[in-house]
Length: 267
Figure 1: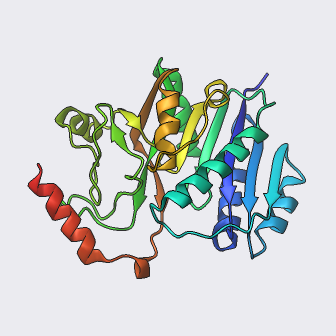
Figure 2 (figure 1 turned 180 degrees about the vertical axis):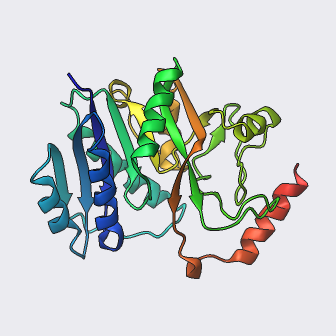
């Protein structure tokens, strides 16, 4: 009997990238696993709902759509956004309460990935005995502004804290500050974290059912990861690269460079 993977994702006004993402999920279905889909959407003004309803008709899982009339936030650290994200993430998690899947794949709906990324995660979570959550090396199309090492850089730094609970670096290839972590990263070895997400994360479903998202003002994933650590460890895999595209019209590169300079002074 094949193992089942539950795919978990939030959606809102996702039409610009939804067909690419659904195509990527269809590609996963060629693997030797059964797949279920647990999708939550709120307040879309475009065709996200009808597209997802049509796609889900041929698949196992649950799709919940709600009109909450909630504010639409951009990429901001506003605590109200974190609270809304936690509310929505927990609603989506509740959809898979009856699943018997072995693993759950948690994705941001705009991430670029393929089946090799999932294969890599599956291999890693099986190889590391204490691994409950394995996260990706999510890349953005902004270069390494600290060392000039790469043409892209690690993106999802906001929820990323190393195993000592120390905040990580922005706008650089390797976000970790500790020498041992940096060595592991350069060797392509998974790095243990206190908190991480990366837009494409695989975790054990039995652990997911026991934890929840909450915020005390920080990123929605931080307390989630704190609860996960009661059951095992969290790792970020430098070899498992996925991608996100940044809207450059919303990015002040000069400010990004200044942040990188300040980080260099702390080295």
